[in-house]
Length: 337
Ligand SMILES: Nc1ncnc2c1ncn2[C@@H]1O[C@H](COP(=O)(O)OP(=O)(O)OP(=O)(O)O)[C@@H](O)[C@H]1O
Image (cartoon, rainbow, N blue to C red; front, side, top):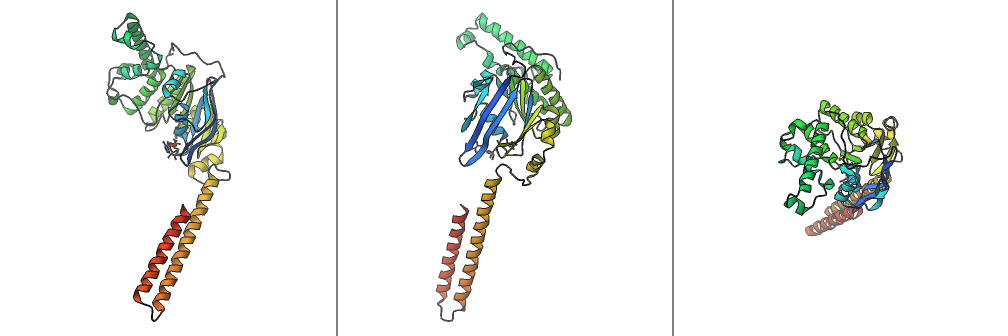
């Protein structure tokens, strides 16, 4: 990876310390499931902020709310003081770019073409100018290609400009995703598990690349499970558990918080997000199994009483068993709902 400077053509750099992203009271519900609950998060210019949390904590859902893929049930997302619309291309146009947990490249396009695709939000030339290949279109095309090549130099992929994306090794595919995201000239880059599946060497290279991106004035919000990577990289870390921010602070603060460790290990702790709901569900399940056990006992007692009765007709015992057993099942289902 090279750390040459990149010269963004259209991005206005954020003022030092300016709040770039402000997520305010963001909540996302899917039917009865609250995946993200009242999340408040800011990212300032010049910062790398980490978002950690156990599987299913709501990190990707939160990213999807930030980038217009989901419309949050409640709350707003602002970029440099302006509330963002719920349309992903408008969010990209505003200045937020992202990569995905599962690589989403155009596998049969070349490395250069993939980056050129990322420039579409910054290209003003219309359909007619493209069809007629007007001089203005040719100029824009040349400028786009120059910029794409700068980004390939920056990410260390220039020598592979004509390779098909699918033929790149995994670590380079991840870099290419980042180059494509940078092609939209973002002021904030969201990275969803950028080192997933990487070997330690590739992870170190990714770390260097992210530092270099930050040094270019682009704020970064990154989701990652690799704690060493995140604590080394980030200025600030927020830990999401059951959709809620459990702790937010410096890497040292978050690393030293016992609740974070407990959340990752799945150990219960006082005041854990979602603990009340979990306790209610557990209590309901316990009472359902107690009721089911009671019904089963009653059914057994009725069966043996019927069998013991000397003149009871044979089918009467069967009838009792059937009825009791059905009642038992129904009772159990009713309780657990
Ligand atoms: N479109 C959806 N419809 C219904 N439930 C969803 C949807 N997307 C996510 N969820 C649920 O929301 C919760 C949070 O999922 P999410 O993928 O955001 O977690 P995560 O923290 O990114 O997990 P991981 O670290 O495993 O990627 C999970 O319970 C998930 O099943």
